[in-house]
Image (spheres, helix red, strand yellow):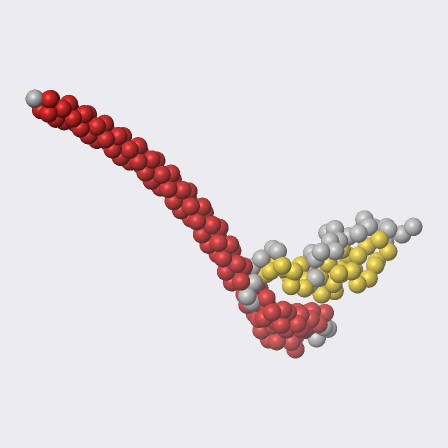
Length: 189
């Protein structure tokens, strides 16, 4: 009988031990699951943060490249236009010579054709954003004017453009193609 009773006690202890082990296993699994879920959430947040950072960097690169492409397109004709400027100057000089000539009648047809060509160049310049610098009675600006001579006078304020010897040109209001060669006023002392 003692043997049976020992078996029952032993059995109860085993059940108790098994219950404790099962309970410990359950707690370990639960804690592990919670730990892994926390790590998963942290990893997901890190991935989202990295995706956002990457997206911002991609947009910055995209915007920078777009600006570079736009700038390249905008100023791609700069060298060609600079080569055209002496042609425009020659046509304008020819027109000026005809206009001051005493025998204008002989040159009317040539003058009309040269004016037509000048008008075509003006339209061309407008299409490509080229502005002519040929204003007189404006303040001398060394960033767009090149002083070729000084005109001493009391009639005009100092540092004003008196005459434009050769017009200058600006591309898209920002890039100087050629400075205007000008005569600048200075007060007599």
